[in-house]
Structures are given as structure tokens and as C-alpha cells.
Amino acid sequence: MPGFHVSDFPIVLNYSNESFDVVNVLTGQRDVLIQGTAHNLWNQQGSFLTNNEGQDVQQDFHFCTVQIGDGGEYMHNWCCFTLESDFFEFLRSCGRLPPDTLGQTSAVLQQNT
Image (cartoon, rainbow, N blue to C red; front, side, top):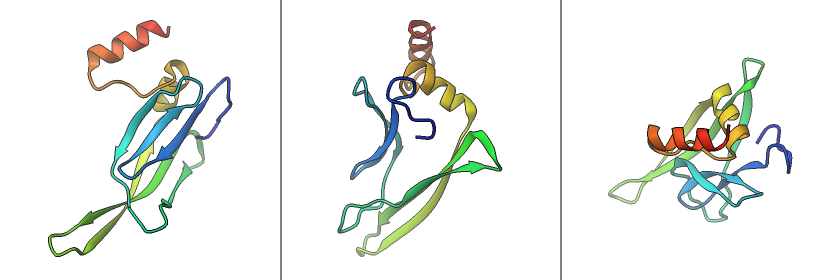
């Protein structure tokens, strides 16, 4: 993750056979950021982050996913997911992704402020 620091911002992006995950290397907290990846024979996933129009606090996450059709054909999709400054602020202050519900997110924010 841009700005990674083991004590100040211990967040990395990781991928598995099923998802792209945000991982806090200090706590071990793993949260699914994007469900879906592009499987291949060598288990390597193409993805990268870019600054969005030169802004340091906004990043575009580029990645590939795949769907397998009924006849076994592979449909690859190249995707771009914009990560706004509030995304990085939440990660920096809470060390994880926001939970699924607003009530859970409020509880996490209260614990970390």
C-alpha cells in the first residue's frame, strides 16, 4: 500500500485464489477488498496502484478478474477501483477496512478515536 510503514501504516494488499485483501501486518486482520481474481497456472496476479491525476491521497487500483462460461471459456475483465482519501484515512486510524454495516463501522470508529 502506498505509505506503508510497519508501525505507522502497516497495511498491505494481498491476493488469494478468491479475492484481493487488505492485511494489517501487525494485527493479522485480513479484510476482503474485492471478491474475485484472475486465476492462472502460475498463481500470479497482475495488479497495480496509480496516483489519480497526480493526487497523493487518491489512488486507482487496477486489477483483472475472470469469469468461466458454461462452455469453459474464460472471460477476463480489466477493472479500475478508485480509492479516495477517506479510504486511506480510515485504514490509517482503524487499521482495517470498514465493517459491512453502519452500526459496526460506528463502533470501530468509536474504539479508535
